[in-house]
Length: 89
Image (cartoon, rainbow, N blue to C red; front, side, top):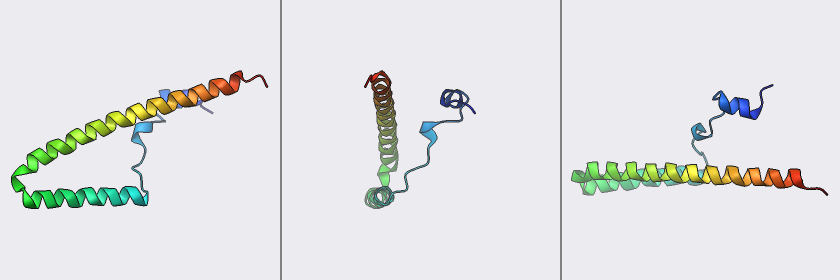
């Protein structure tokens, strides 16, 4: 059986390629985003490129936030493990 480090090294574990959330809250929010986009494009059809650039910038910031959250969570988990392994009780 491969260790988790081996699986990570060989690309068998890829946290950034996990499935999109399917919670009701997420699905509803995605639908609202689509409705807002449709409404804006109907009102301001000349702003399509601007809206796409805005959406791209939002995706980049979201990805950066996701990476930072992952790094913090991983570090926190490692600190928990260190404390647990060092507990002499």
